[in-house]
Image (cartoon, rainbow, N blue to C red; front, side):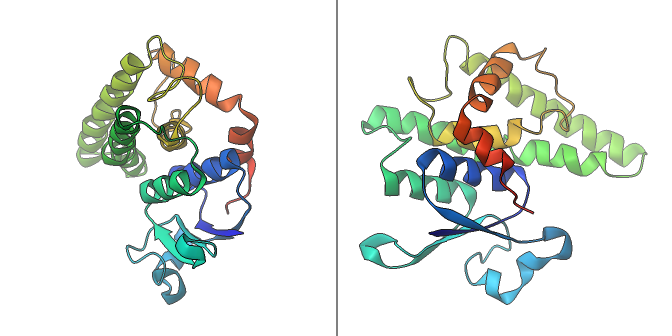
Length: 209
């Protein structure tokens, strides 16, 4: 039974979706980031960067427990553990790595800044921050839209990969990003395909807070 320490955020949802898709038993321990529980000593022992999500797998390498922090590292760990949602051949693996890093480096930090500035008081600082990060967020949606032309999934054929699980966590918040799928129809079609998967739906329905 994997312990998932998380909250109801895009990064948290990446992992609940992956665990459901992989059929791994897990239990959720909510970490209320609004109450700053991510800074408590018990959580810091498994997540030294004060961020959710993190997992503890009692059946880790060589049968010994392991803790993993950072959502991208968790996805890579779970793919290695199960042998699923990651191609075996190097060329296919590289594509998954690329799009996972694309999400971690851009399609997450940029819309996260949109969220931040939308919560600020109206004024020049809010307007500047929103324009800057909303513009970059829409550029990233366009990159994804072009990638998905003629493809069912972002990095693989036939079934999704952990890159899709990473990206769906943030695409789930597209309305909060003030982004319409009408502008990005390939992303909208992919989003519909992903959300129609029973395990993905369970990953979004499980209580994380």
